[in-house]
Image (cartoon, rainbow, N blue to C red; front, side, top):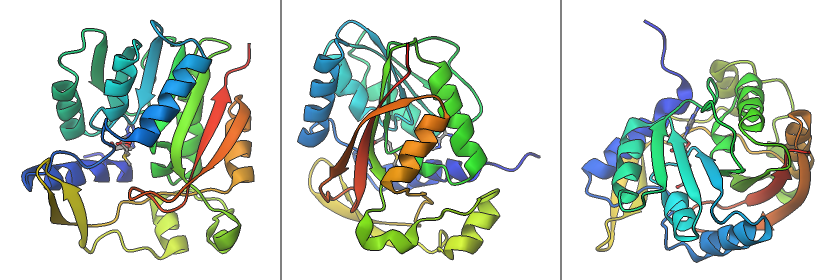
Length: 249
Ligand SMILES: C[S@@+](CC[C@H](N)C(=O)[O-])C[C@H]1O[C@@H](n2cnc3c(N)ncnc32)[C@H](O)[C@@H]1O
């Protein structure tokens, strides 16, 4: 039997969180910073009424916001529990749909006017998976279309020593390089919609990059990078950045 990819670790996490009675793990559609960023991006790129794919959409927070902003939304994620939840969360938006898709291995087979990735890219740790995903994302866009990488794990000047610049050819290599523990459950607070509860879940691997590293990865895939924004610390992630990219005409 084929081994499951490491990035399916999120499925286990979603299940643990939902079984504990939590409303969600990822972004809330009420996240004001996310809402403001998406509103500005949609307005600047005239995306109302246009088709947008969101890779690694999770429970669909971005989808709710983009649907409210009048976009035609297609969310995709590899974790079945998140896809089910996103379908439920978006059931009242007739121009929204959600599907299971492995963004590393497949494209949705359509061309979109824009693409969003909200904390998705950094979940991929091998060089090959990152390159393959960016290529798929690039191929999914019409020429001239924007892609927003929102709140990706980021290495700024204060902890530069954590940047992994060497080749990472497999998940095992990543484990050896980082020495991270992705097994031991740790306490995390999640929202039940009626207060917080504690859930014990292991860390899920994520590979951060620095500014030059992210820009070089996106440019190698063919994107032009228009803006790189360092984000404030949030309760979702300590150091993050948003990258505004575009497929050239
Ligand atoms: C940190 S969560 C972000 C979820 C959501 N975008 C949000 O901000 O709440 C990362 C998501 O990436 C998804 N993911 C990881 N690898 C993937 C892949 N190869 N294809 C599609 N989704 C993937 C996970 O299932 C998970 O939902």
